[in-house]
Length: 280
Image 1 (cartoon, rainbow, N blue to C red):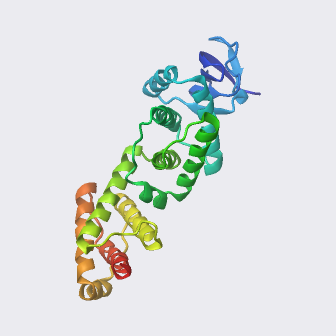
Image 2: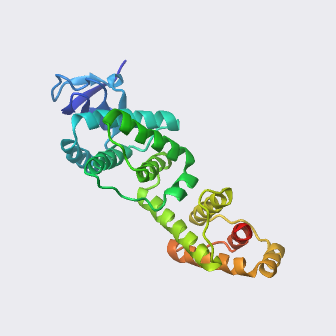
Image 3: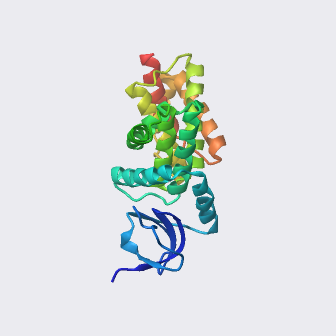
């Protein structure tokens, strides 16, 4: 038997808020699903192309406040975009992306129409860390161009990729941005201390960024790489500049994350730094 959702509010022809017998408050999205329907009526749950939960009054209020500021064309377009992202990523998205990404792209389109552009200082790092999300975000920007007739700047690919990454990992966008800023700070320190300019397009730069990202994750999960006393002594003697720089980066990481960092991280970071130093 198909479950019925009692309509609480029809937002427009294609979006309505209802009460599901199990999931409680839900948003149903589908072409014409709200057409000619009224509060209190029921609609089959499987009529929706896409559904998502409203987790609490705060999220409901955010969604209700956002929609009146959006054109119907944007709402319909974003419904298609979110279904497309979920299909391309091959997994369900955290429900909050429906509000956050809709809000972001709607305002990005408005800014672009007024020739107001934001740069994205973390573009290389985002592409390196979240390659699939970045590719899907690029496709979304192409969709904006083709369907909405608006060209978004390249920096928006990075911002959209972060929203996608947040939705597939359940990580808060705030924490993701914090980690990206920390990685960018590391890059600044490395370039300053080694007196070089890192080529963002190289495999070695990509490896460094990936390593720093994994190191931050290991710190959060309290993971250890294990003791390597002989290797530590060798690297300290052979590559003192990179070894000391690695320690400096670890101290910064420790301070910014406010968590202890396994000393073995220094060793593997030294190897990455020495490789970059040799090639520069």
